[in-house]
Length: 109
Image (tube, rainbow, N blue to C red; front, side):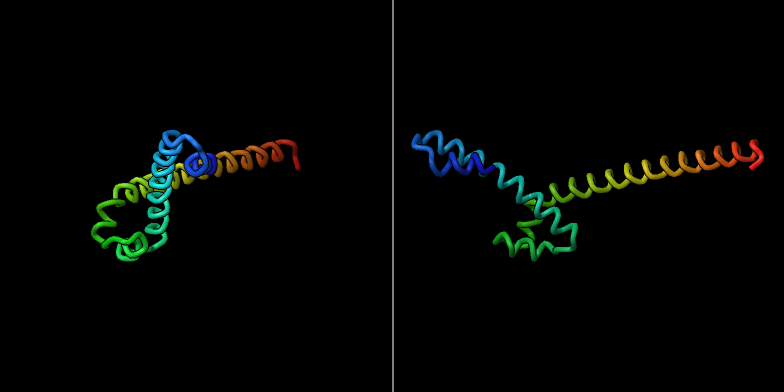
């Protein structure tokens, strides 16, 4: 993003600067949507989000609710994946402990 900013603000060729400015707008829009998603996930209301970006709560919801929904879906998916991996690791650990205990029992310890 820094290189894009530098090009947009310093390139002597106005068309190169314009192209960089358009790319920067796209990057900032994506970043803004992510920040809104994180804010809503942390408990911010649409009214607060709208006030922060200078629109009504309804306009904020219209503009960002799909991004927030996708963010929640990804977080939920990541949590399920983490839970499943944790369960698998716990099962493997339990089996390893049982196996060691059986091995010790056979050796007469």
